[in-house]
Length: 314
Image (tube, rainbow, N blue to C red; front, side):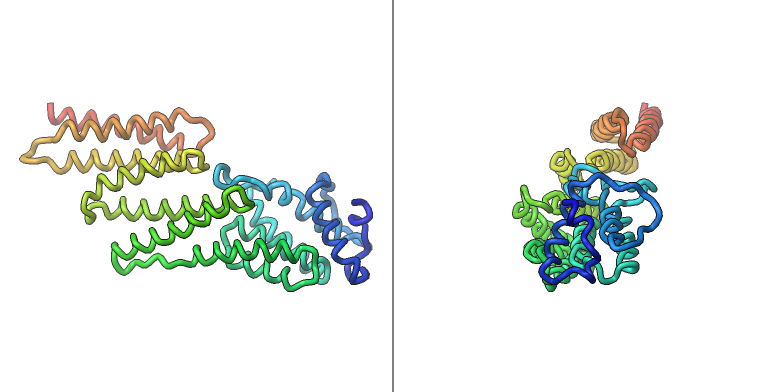
């Protein structure tokens, strides 16, 4: 791999050598240790070494499970994939003629992980138009991303509540199909993340409009509980549980405010409170999740609210 890493600039590489150079750069990205960060390089090897440095961390995170874990951060705390795009644009400015296939391919992969499938598709298409060893892989991955872009572009109509729910369900079905088609493949975790996100939008719509739906409260609770169970391995598992607890707490407050002949349905009230408090307590016991502090505060607030309501009754 040393020869590939120290090949001359692409403007001086013979046409038959360019595929070997591109492959060599990619292999270096995947196998070489991270170069020391220093001043901008110059000389005939500058472009290749600069690109390897730009993509070193990015290459290590290409196989990250973005459904089960949050996106990686760079040393400044920014999203590594977004930071990589900026670095690639800077590289293109400094070296506009060098390795366009590698640069476009890397940009496509970054766009996929940022959820911008239309731009990812266009970047893969740019690679597919070049005489590059990356062309077959770009065509293959571009076809998958094209299907993801179509799913992402499906409408979420808002003219009526019924049409919004129907359109979200259609979009969810499309992502569910993509999850099944990509199980065990490169973009499985990305598809699962998108399915989860659309499912969350559908759940939010049901929760926010439960008063207008037949059996809306029961449907909302059932849907929220299903999402907690289905996405128990997600990076957002605690957030889903917190939403279910918030829904139960809201139903408890509704129950306290809608008394029949001034009488509280104490059994229903206590059931909602108990369900919410159990979930809040479980989240509050977790370490390393951002929802922990919020759950602790809501647990204390709900305990105080329960005491106030029952004090009025008894």
